[in-house]
Each structure stands twice: as structure tokens, then as C-alpha cells.
Image (cartoon, rainbow, N blue to C red):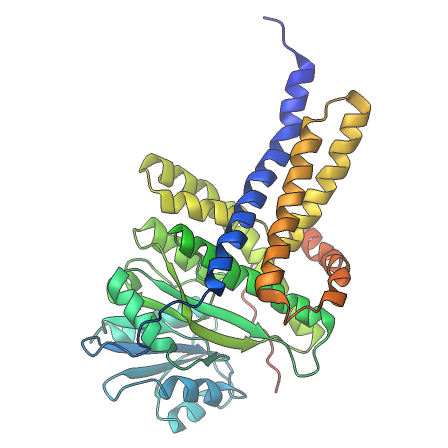
Length: 401
């Protein structure tokens, strides 16, 4: 049999553009469907069902500067029978004392060899196990819960029997720059637009950090004890593989704040984006394999969602492929890889424009859109660093005072 080397080379060269086309098309579909979320629709009562027992677990490492604000937003939504636990984890400040003054039950944990939010959550869940609640809600110590958040989360977790992720967004600093606005928009695409698109597809979402409600059966289905730098994403995928795919709850809203320090912002972005790439490396094939083997569409959907690279990297990679496949076409006359790469780029731009029109105009003004490419280019060193040595140690982002 004669081997057609030109066909083989074209096929190999088209593989990566094809994969990017699939993931970019998936992102565009999510952004299209998320526009349905702009239409007003009836909302359930924002009250914790009377027949449910609820506990809120707050892991906190040196959060004295802001924990009282967070606890106030939680306590305003609790009933007398609900419980609020703060895990003061390896703290060297007044976190424990301040939480105790606020009326919370405080559990102190000291283990410098096991650092990270996952270990703190595991410690808290062990304390709850003696008298487990129906629903446990995980809330970070540096965020605010909008009114009704706990009620929405508890209702959906009870009705579905699945983990539930609130809408978790970032505010810009008081004197925020255009770069901060672009960061807030990118965070909104990741944590609101794309999960909302998945919700309208009827598919599960990734866990994105704080505002997570777990039925007790799910809270104990997998181990959360780890120092992984994106322990929330890891937890969501472990739960999905164990039969508890997370669901998105748009009405429940949790707000945190972007750090004003550029050093802190870089630390935060490095942890998030390196963590995403590590999780993609470790979980994507497992999700597709188990999803196909057991005909679980939700796992395949999560595999596709996880395969969408961090947006800046997806854009930069796609543009690089457009350039490379252009050279291939000029040199050898094979244009299929170029068409695939070009279509992937168009899908990506189309999806992001829809996301901005629907959800991002308050974060990025029209005149600021031209600064987005420069912002993406500033993140190239972050991805280059991943190739040399990915961040794999949990580092707490410094808070603004």
C-alpha cells in the first residue's frame, strides 16, 4: 500500500486546530445559551427549607482583616437551628478570636506540614460528622453572600441531591485600572457565563471556589484533604466521577474582591491558571474515558469544559496556529489546517463578544476593548513559567487591608 505522505502530514497538522475548533465552538455555544439568562424568570423563595438542617463551614488562614464582614453576611441568613463553623487553619493572627467574638463556633487546626484549604475543609467535615447536617455550605473567609444565597443553595442541593455552585464573581479595587476590569470580566466569563450556558444545556459545571452547597452524602463521598492549588476544581471533578456532578445556581451570588497589589494579583492568577492546566492534564482523559464507557453525557460535557484552556492561553494558542498553518499553506498548498484554525479563532471571538455584550459592558467599556490583546500578551510569561515548572504549592493570596 502506497502511503500518501502529504495526506498524513496534513492530517497531523490539522489535529491541534481541530481540537481547538471543538473547544472554541463549545465555549461559543455556552456564551450563546447564557444569553437566555438575561431574560427575567420566576425565582424560588430565597429561604432555607424548614425541614433541612444546615451547617456553614468557613476555612480561614490569617483572615483577621476581613472575616467579620464575611461572617456578618452569613449570619444574616442563618436560622437559630443552623450552625456556623470557622476552621482557623494554621493562623498566626486574631482570626480565631474575632470569629469567636462574632458568635461562630471556632475550630483551630495547627499542622504546618499540611497547608491548604482542602486540609482545613477536611478537618471541619470531621467535626461535623458526629452530628451531620443535611446540607453543608462551604464559604471562603474573604467574600460576601448576597441576601438569599444560602436559601437558593440549600433548596437546589436538596432537590437535586448534587453539589451546587453559586455564582462567584469578583469586584475591582476602589481605584481599579482597565486591567482590573478585564480581569473581572474574564472571571465573569469563567464563573457566570460558561456555567450558565452549561445549565441551559442541562449539564454539570465545575466548582469555582466559594459558595458550594453539598448534600451530606456528597460531602463524604470523596476525600477533600489535599494541598492542591485549585482544590475546588479537583473536588468538583472527583465528585462528578463518584456520581455527584455539580450543578450551577445562578440566583445564589457570592462576591469577593480582586487584590489591588500587582504582586498579589499575579500570585492569584498563577495559582488559578497553572492549577487549571494541571487539572486538565490529570482529569480530562479520565472524564472522557468514564463518560464514554458508561454513557454519561455529563462527564463528557465536563471533559469538554475542562479542555477549554484559560481564555488568554486559548486565544494566544489559536492565533499562533493561524500563523503557523498560514505558513504551511503557503509552503505546501495544504490549507485545511488553516481553515480549521481560522474557524476556531472566529468561534472564540464570537463567543467572547456575545459574553461581553450580555454581561461584560460594566466591567470593560467599549473604548477599553482594544486593550484586551495587550492584557493577554502580558500573561504569556505566566504560561511560559508553567512549561518550565508549574506552580504546585498552595499559596494564600494577600488580602487588601
